[in-house]
Image 1 (cartoon, helix red, strand yellow):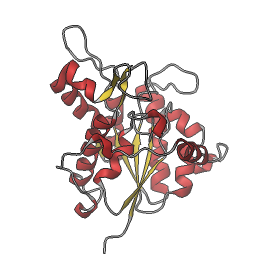
Image 2 (cartoon, rainbow, N blue to C red; image 1 turned 180 degrees about the vertical axis):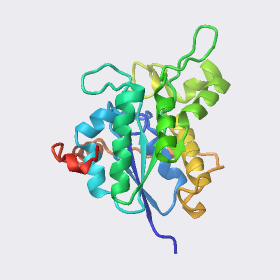
Image 3 (cartoon, rainbow, N blue to C red; image 1 turned 120 degrees about the horizontal axis):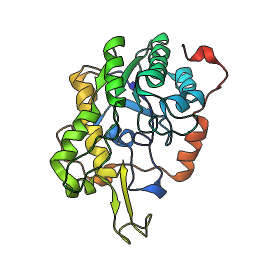
Image 4 (cartoon, rainbow, N blue to C red; image 1 turned 180 degrees about the horizontal axis):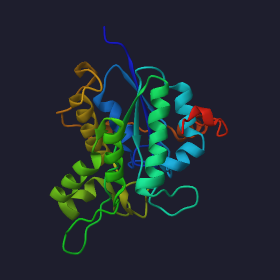
Length: 263
């Protein structure tokens, strides 16, 4: 009989689970359970979090208090680290790598297995249809640290760049949160968001992450399902707003206990 597995997610809004009031916006971590069996996904990702703020506000310490031997911890930051907001900004090959190292050391100290996942790229095209790479050096900094620390890497960034280019400016609208006025009751005026995914995009990113987890042997093959099956956008589950708020508030640990997060 297959033993249950647990997968903790530490990340930003592109990973986090969204409440029903924000549907069809979804993070890829929200869609990951679609491709797993006998596995619990503990999605502690937080919108607006950088590798620094997630740690300094006690969210990593909560994970480290609850994670156990042989659990996986998928770590995905970068989109907020690049923003020069107080308490969030990190430089790719300095602060960013420094904080990511602390996630790795903290997980390993508890017998758990850290995994890096580079952030998917934003939907940015110029007037000629050429795609930009606004994430800059953050994915490369994560790749470099993964090699230095022997951390498995799921390169969602590189995969997403190839996919977004293939689908182009028009095709990618169906993956990101682009809605016409009146198309969805949660966004009556419409929305054009080039950072956050809708269900379809979240499903495809989660499928890639799951495939990479299987190919790298992070979990045995029997833990995966439907990796080659067409999955409808409606398969993404949205929790009640009160449930999401309660989980968000509860998944915070003490910020003064520095021993929880090795330097």
